[in-house]
Each structure stands twice: as C-alpha cells, then as structure tokens.
Image (cartoon, rainbow over all chains, first blue to last red; front, side, top):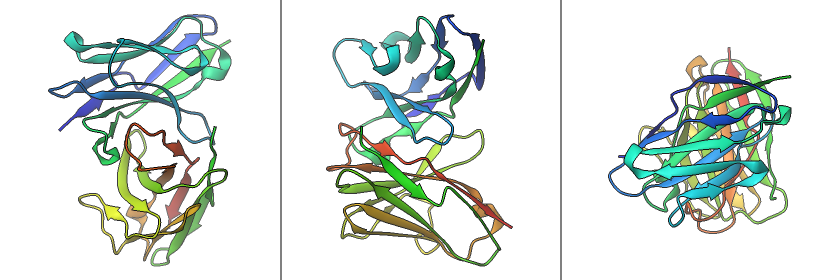
Length: 114
Length: 118
C-alpha cells in the first residue's frame, strides 16, 4: 500500500524567504499526489495536485511542487513566503482514483517570522 | 470555492454519552461525504465514506456501531459518536465532493470538530 512521509514536523522561515516543504512517498507505480494547507479554524484547502504530465505543478497562492520519480518526492515550494502562509501543510498520496486509497502525511507546521 | 461547515466546532462531553457532529455543504450538493479523524501530530485517517441515501462504507478497523454516520440529504451528513469514551477524544473532520468522490474530484473540507470526552 502507498504511504507518505513528511520529514519535517515544524519549519520556521522569515517572511520573504523561500520555502521548501518535503514530501516522500512510497508506491510502486506513479501515484496521485496532493498538497493541502490547513489554517487555524479552517478546513483543509487543496493547493495543488499531480496526476500525470508535467512534473512541475503550479498551484494557488504562489505555490508549486515538483514530482521527482527518482527520489519518490513531491516537495512543495514557494519563492517568497508571506506571513499569511503560516499554517499546517499536508502531503497526500493516492494509488487510484478512489478516495479511500488516499493517505495523508502527518503534516508540517510552518511558522513565519516577521 | 465551495464551503463546508461543521457544527459544533468543539464539544466536551461526559463518558458514556453520545455526541452528534454535523457536516453541511453550504453552496453545493454533496453526493459523497467523508469523515476523517486526526490525532495530534498524526495524519488524517479516513473513517468512512457516505453517499446520500445509502449506508456509509467504513474503513477497516472503524466500528460502525460506535461511529454512526447518516447522510440523509445532499447537504447534510452527521457523525454520532455513541457511548463516547476518553479514547474517542480527537479532531473529526468531514469533507464533501459534488459527484462520485473520486480523487479526480475536488474534496472540500470542513474546519473540523474537537471532541473531548471526560
């Protein structure tokens, strides 16, 4: 079965600095990959997803992620972080289009310093 | 984007009582709704999938008699934690999808409900 690991529990970056959140997955074939953001008091919001095609995926709020099959990774990046980006970020992986196949990582909490 | 609400946002109850959590899609018809449980420092765990008018499909290891799910309309699903115990304390999140609920369809998540059982 597929699984996903987010190695960093908590990351702190300065406002304006670049950001990279790591996500590693385990699955034998090409997975379906997602990044979600969860702000306090808000539901999870989809930032971007990868199903096939171009391995560099653009999402909302200036985020992008790159699927690297050789590294089994799908890291989330943003060139310049804003204070409003402080939130919990979840990577998720699916083996099929069935929702009950999707597995979430444990999340990475992002703190943004002024 | 579409909005999903949950009520209550947090609830404290005594051990042995039952608690009902509501999940509503506010501006779209949710054919499929999902219920997740999130433990501290842990990922979301899918508990069950419900389709309007049908019985919920529970994931392995989830007690269907413990966690009663009803999806009586296209805008409302409820999760009832029956005879709650302290180990049921958790963060419960629902999500909704407008069609089949497959991964190709966007899921819209509610803000979650914090349950504390004393």
